[in-house]
Length: 246
Image 1 (spheres, rainbow, N blue to C red):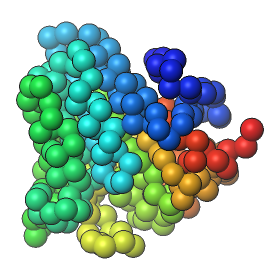
Image 2: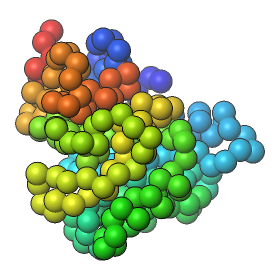
Image 3: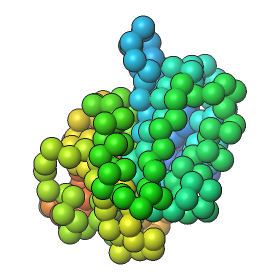
Image 4: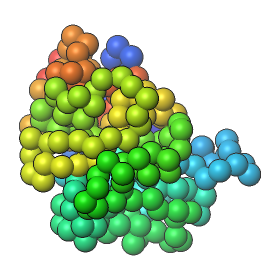
């Protein structure tokens, strides 16, 4: 996958990860272009099969990326199923809802409806039952997974020290966050490990320390869960990449 030349990007290999660094002004366009290219390619690889599965994350970074992705030409959205990497225990119209973010920045802007949209019903009182239902819906493996990284090194709603970081058969689990709202639903390490392609989208100086630890620190996902995404394509702006060294 090649980003647009005018975006002035730098691409390199760091350990098991492909890393692409671009100027903050170009971050959304570069990330959206690469996601769109991957979706188009994956649809061509699966003619006549089940829809391509795309699992998305929330947070402060992906909104502008999703807006650009909605306008990307040639993406056959009717052949794409939308899933979620995690969700907060809030109603779907709450400002903190990942589903609301994806709906407003992507789904409502698409030229045609997506093939299917499967949101995590994390607002339900029985979160364990809701997680079990979502696990049955979630394709295994996910074709394309978009993740972010928090300042503490978390990804999805897998936070440092979480019991959900232990390898096990579950693919969707109830999670507790040190941030509010505390209760959440999340994919587990197994989903990240088996996904066809993992995109990690990170921008901003506050994330630089976590990015460096995730990509080049001693391997310890319990301390830095974002290390689970080593092996994916990391798309960073120059600020998020600031601690990676020359």
